[in-house]
Amino acid sequence: MATNKKNEKMSREEAGRKGGKATSKNHDKEFYQEIGEKGGEATSKNQGKEFYEEIGKKGGRSSSNQRNN
Image (cartoon, rainbow, N blue to C red):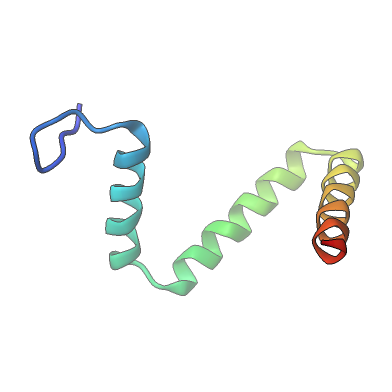
């Protein structure tokens, strides 16, 4: 298991944050865009129309709620 500077076991959250920061130092914007595109393509192969309708509705409700507050 990974340890932090105090030689204590890191939580999964702390390890993920640390790994994300290290990755961001080594890669540029295009790297993350490419990963996002690949993820979107994989999702579209595995999900149907209903999936996208539902996330669209959730986003619309969230936007509406933010504007009304």
